[in-house]
Figure (spheres, rainbow, N blue to C red):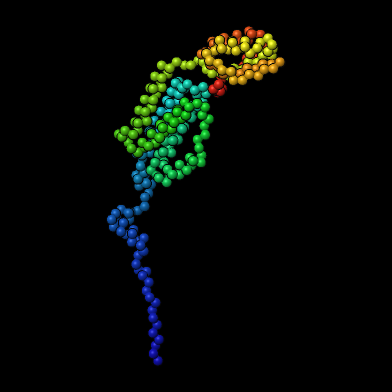
Length: 269
């Protein structure tokens, strides 16, 4: 009786290393230090780039100081009618935040694209009343951009000094403009005149006084009835003296006359 010949199962190539192991072995042959012990606290501290962190901290301090100087320049040289003191308090935070964001995203294209997407959803909503405020906001953002792009380049490169030179130049221009620019004490106003006795004080007498005591006047609306007369003018006064003179002569026209003035540019804070 012949013994049944049993076929042994085919041997699997378990003795062959996997592709990942082969890759690690090849890298270890090229660099034997890869097979060293894992990094402990001392090795991790040595591998940390303390120089880059120090460069970032120094530039952050310089950015904050520059933004503080920009705040003082805006309070001194600005012509805005709004409360410049409250508005300029945001310059330091805006510049330092811009520097931080630029430092984080400048080395990563994915983070840069993500930042663009975030800004398209969350937009900077500030109550901008005058173009001068927008210009100073752009200058504060530019300071942060300049210092953020200079992180890691070292102080021997010209990049960290570009924001400082630009700030010094623009500050000088603002101070020169402040010295040679005469502040306009006049302005455009909406002048509303109401007469409760139109038979005594008519529109002709009112218009004569307005044209005589203002630099420029244009009648915008006239409402007249038997009981009341209302005239709305857009006028320009050279200064407070001319404004006060016009108001005084209007009130001297007769009893029952009221005068109301409103700045054409709106009321500042």
